[in-house]
Image (cartoon, rainbow, N blue to C red; front, side):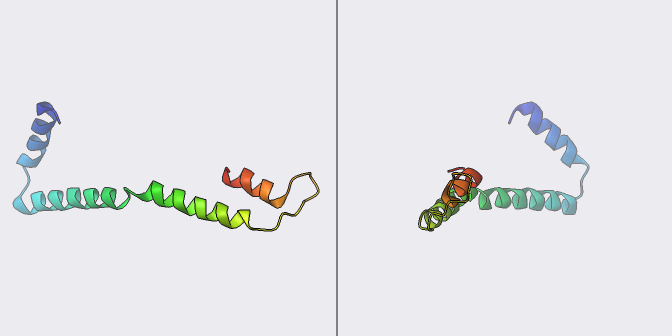
Length: 80
């Protein structure tokens, strides 16, 4: 952060009571915890998609009348 940004924060906190400052600190900590909890979300989603694709790959291939199999349709829908 820049000095200007810190000064802005300090000015905002200057008029607050101790209780209000604690509330600000608690909200900031909650925000940090939320960000940390979501840090591995993309990796978990990729793993879930990979597992879904493995399950789709073992499904029997059935032609649906449009020249594509059910597997082809699933690959279009799920991006694989």
